[in-house]
Length: 183
Ligand code: HEC
Image (tube, rainbow, N blue to C red):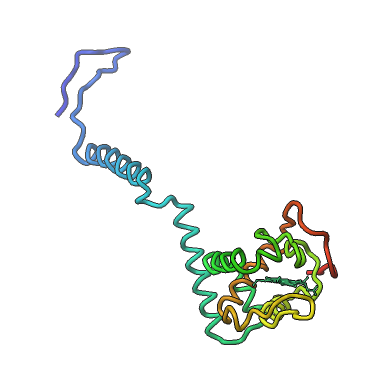
């Protein structure tokens, strides 16, 4: 089992024991796992714990949004739930950049239309106020009626996006108009 290596120091005899198989399997297994994991991460085939976590959160938020929509009532809570779904908000941003940007600037800072990134609102700050503004428009003031043009799903998505950019105060935005929203 053990070889005496004829090396004694302070009465301590050095042996050359063969390492048990389970120990070697653990060691080489850990090295192999490390290599595979490292390579997998490099090739982006394996998610980092942070990536896996945010993917799970995003999936949960999407499921919540789906359920809120399925209830069929558009209220503040429903729109707030939609605004927490990153994929839905990203679709809203696409609509915003293509449809709303000419008047509100691509970043929402305002142009002909008001700055949507401050905390001030002309027509109310509640999610349902934004939904009404976008869906029905404020025609007399030059804000078109988007409901029939975009369809309800896109209107909900773009409102969710506006809820996310509210209060981000982008640089060079238009001066505040309307009333400070107390939330
Ligand atoms: C043709 C120009 C134009 C386009 C395009 C446009 N808007 Fe507007 N929007 C306006 C104007 C002008 C107002 C301000 C109306 C007022 O003064 O009462 C406004 C107001 C708003 C408000 C209310 C702001 C407040 O202070 O209460 C929201 C929300 C809004 N727009 C969202 C959108 C979204 C979302 C889109 C894209 C789907 C969009 N707008 C596209 C011109 C536009």
